[in-house]
Image 1 (cartoon, rainbow, N blue to C red):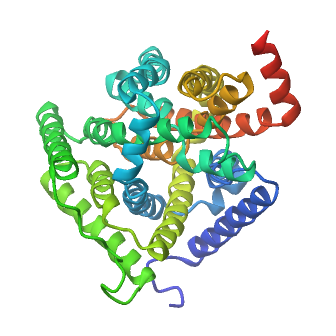
Image 2: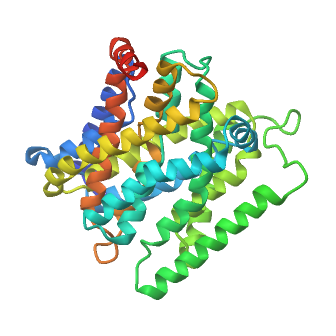
Length: 402
């Protein structure tokens, strides 16, 4: 306990300062009506970039271990976010096939092309396509809640886009993560095949069953213990991830799919609230880990590329929301609001960036891509907040309606 443990006093002090800085920053941004998701990411990037602050940076082994655990728990919690009812509601609001095709063309394709032109290779291009293609559910819900827009005519279209992207990621994320498998071509092929098998099994379980799934938390079934149940779920996610790693299957994809499969089972409201808190905590740890793992030398290039990528990918999301909201409203202001709500990238983008940062240099696209993802998350989260100002929004809607 007194300097004889595995964590030195300097590491504990540094972690304490960093955690306090993240918490205070999150409280300040939340109090100002802003999204707190970029705060731990910015804190990590600042500590990595500023030489005098390097003393606060935890040991690399501590950072990597914490980031890997947070990544698994985060993706499992994201998978739990939507159930079959959400998927059916999305299909009833828009034509999901057309929506996904448009979303892929406007958002995934630019990230893929940017990755190839930036020299990150095919694997990096696929991962960057996932970053630019996935909007942030948490950021979108936060915008709708803070501005009291859940009753707006365009809001069902926004929810439909988010749920459709969530479902598509069930196949995209495991296969993309397999491209980072260590070893040669045989190891990557094995990882891809294993991921494809897991995706097929999850799809069969989620779509092929005819009986109603058991309800975790059904009335009278058992006394409610939401905190203990949330820990049990997190432990199950880590257990499945460990088994997947032993079989050579990407742990990230397995965790995400496991959460998606259990989405219809976990129904207790108190349990969902505790899982939501666990999701927020794991998001903060994952974002902080991503920031800390980006070397300072990668930031100038990441800033330059991130500005261009954020502009291109942001425009694509605005067009996606504009098209999706068309059947529900003809008002330019409403369709523009729908597009701006989809611009922020969040937990999924952080997960993709962290997968790259944690991969070894000899079989991954490199920390330059991780830095680019970090800048993309920060910029796309901040821009809609500025554009969400009522005067700016009215001016933009007026210009579009001419």
